[in-house]
Length: 312
Image (tube, rainbow, N blue to C red; front, side, top):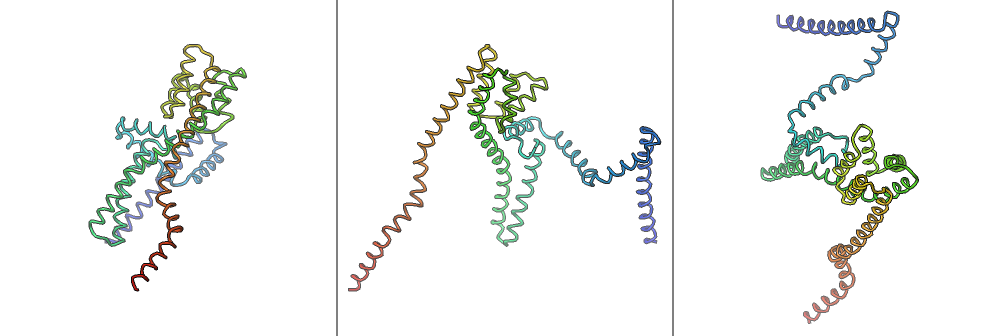
């Protein structure tokens, strides 16, 4: 009796799946025949079947579930926390195209996998309970420290690259304005001729202006995404010149000279710091090696002579 019930259950389940798929196909056929007419029914059905065959199972089933899960997770995420993460991701240039929801889910995944992986690794080493607890705390600390450290490094790198690109950007903008272009046209010429972090920010600024934002709002967003003093001074000077009606060419010339003076001062400061930074490797690694090479033979001879004198 039990085998018969199991057989009937499997049969009815298979029949239900078959009926559901056939009804779905018939519904699609009716919709296509209604929309496109009977003449194109066969070809369009073949096209729909071909498209259905090209779409993978992950795109048809897994991705919609993943998107629904992300939407539900976003609704539960506090707005203040989301705004803070969004600001950090903007400053870091949105690495890997991450959104605040993706970043938060990555943090949770690291908090789960790193401690569990540390405990499993301690079990493989067959250590004591105290050492296993230490491994767990180390994994937890790495999970808490790693995402923020990565974002800080990305922000620092982007700011450094933007600072390096600023003098060339100012020169190209100055030349474009002197040639008779407006400021927006000069930005367009800059975007078409040059690549980089700062150029990408100006390209985003142009796109925002095309979507209806004012120049002041679009340039102000750059100051939020790049925490570089020179860039902030440059944008403030542009906004002030626009407000007071001062010529942009003169402002850009002054800004270019100031930026190059600051770069020269930073180079001189780095040169002054170099001897202090070289002192620690010299004391810890180079001087001991020199002492061993120069004084080693003399010390060996002294020790041998002293031992012979003691024997006598």
